[in-house]
Image (tube, rainbow, N blue to C red):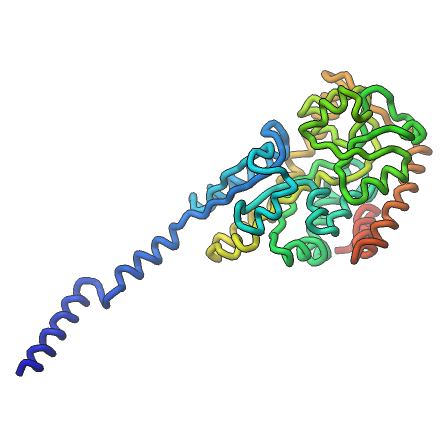
Length: 355
């Protein structure tokens, strides 16, 4: 009889639990699912750029898109101007989980994966204006995805091409560059990339690696005679130079936004999709943003800043472009798939690329 009563009591208990919401643990499971759906994922992002620069503006756009379109489920904590750490420590910090993202120039990217040295090649993508479309096309190719972005992802970083502002050209503080001979013996600040010395040796100047933060002082104190920078930077930081010569020495202002793959893999599928969607929109937004800014910057540096803009003669320019081939050859020899990437870039620039 006791056994019968026990069975009846157990049956009553199960019925009452079902009436109140189901099997044991169902409320907890449902609440847990709801919590997971609403979990906030925080991205700590470090970079070296000041908040007055176009680089920073691009990061802000990316942050706003992620936060708004995720309904706040992604939050970005940005640390500009190397507030958190020097830029050369950011990749290690992403891989060990101290930060989840960064943005940096292509020369620094090349220290993580050498394929990014392609953006150090002089004349490869054309002048500042035409290089915007050429670089964007290059970064959207299957070859870029496989040989550059894919190589970086294999090392634990998801890389989204984000910021373009054209070619880095040469600006000097005292001596104008009107011929290639004027470059000989000059000390020029470069990005410090792997092929900076090759370019410098080819054209006869000395490449000096100096951080962007220290550059204005280095120019005024004569530590360097000039810099490889584009007009947007020269205008935005009010660089203390007197002459600006249009020679496209490199394109290392192709700045990706990089995200830790382990962090990316921890996101729900819908937020991974959002990260990819926003990342895929960065290049087009960059071109839309930068094109009028290039116009404004060229006009401002020659106007309100009083900097003389110099164009080489056609003969000198063509000579400089021909000399660039020596740097390209070095890239092809030293970098796996280098010849394939150079061929891809030249086909885009000369209009023979068919997609």
